[in-house]
Length: 171
Image 1 (cartoon, one colour):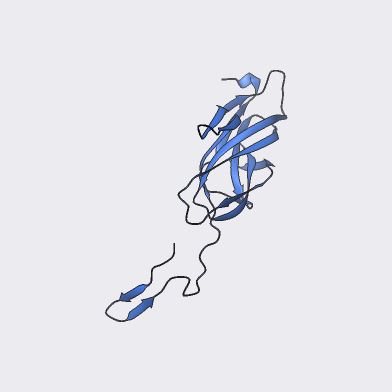
Image 2 (cartoon, helix red, strand yellow):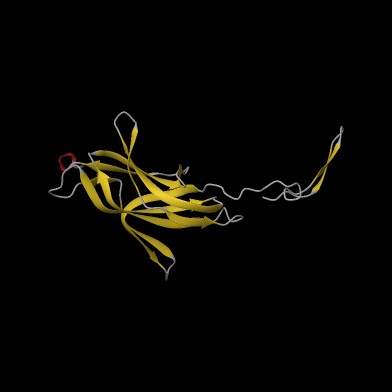
């Protein structure tokens, strides 16, 4: 936000204020967005006629297909994300991590990056985007997390989690 010019008076002194640009202060040209929503699902499509997003079968707990065993590569996972409050151009990707029983995380994969521009002065607007991940590796049953990354920095906000079960552990 650009400051307003004016005068600040107090008992000891009078200070002339000016806009940031007049004082030579550079305004932020890059602010990381935050993740408002993040859902893993079978597929994501955009209904252009109704201007709505359609998510098919959001995931929370999944079981390996009949006859499959670990290690297992999921052919395709889609992630729908709502991002806000950013300024600037970013290379966005999704990083997949396995959360071990002791709480440590192990990176198991990363999507290809795509470019998104967030226009300054429009930080309250939400940007919807999707990520298509292919051949996602699940080495063993357990909890897997999906984190949105911008220029290799993890974004604050929501993450998606999937609990992957062996067929024997079916709920």
